[in-house]
Length: 364
Image 1: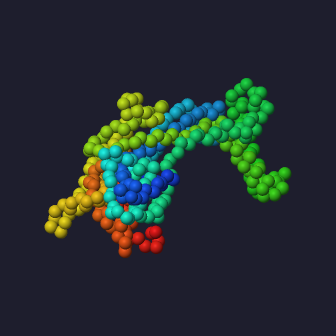
Image 2: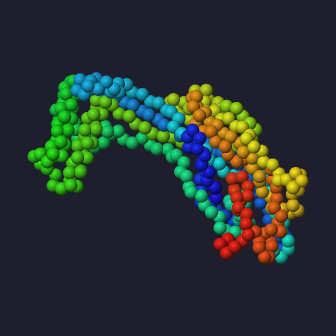
Image 3: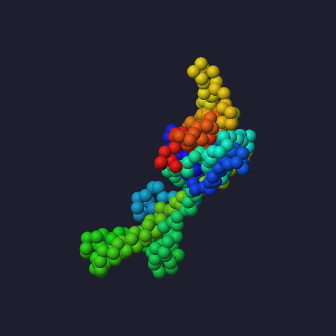
């Protein structure tokens, strides 16, 4: 279970999403000497990079676009480019083998712990673990067919166009056909066509077919543009502060490439420690001592992450980080109190306390 955070800076770049997972219930029993072993997490960041590829191709009659349509922006040469479209940061917890703990309860009690498939704690004494709204990450999208790759493009090729050896003549025939299609559509809309569609549905089909043929003819003069996207995720573990570390590069021809491949422009990551977790203090201002057999949890710190590319900041977010925090404990007696036993919800991304309270009917 992953809790969702959304941090908005210059762009939406920070999110956490929930996904289905396997959970397990561990109960403190005599067989386990009333102890439960579990692992606290480290926080990692998944950096999802989305690139956009644009392929432009000139149409057969691009030289005649100015003559017939007074257009100066026809595509006149084939080109291909790849640009960075978006970067999304998602955080999650992974088991830290150095952070294994034993929560020890008194004999005769039966508290239980819910863990996920990473052996990370989710809850104590409750199975009521709320889910957060799922946030979709970008997915790779294939390029849609161009107007010249449709059945309509074949329909507009008249016998005269196919037989003509002159490019200028074929362009003239294509332009005339385009103007005729526009007139036909206008006649239908005005109810003046010699053969009007039988009903509204037939009219819509006819108009859609006319539009598809028109798009194909226009593409013969103006050219085509296809856009597709690719996605790659890089996992980064916050640790020491770094300034403009290269995490990947974008090549105009290859897309996302490795950080050490000098063929692309670098994506930079800067990490600053904003706040380190601190142990709670007594009324005298002294650090509290870890309770005997205590239920360990994280008091996370905070780090800022900035991602830059080509002089632009794509993400600037502050996130909680388990490894920049400290571990403290809750007295295990709270969870075995016969009158008012406590329940606890963990934040699995950091191992922090999400919610702590007394068990009631809703929490059982």
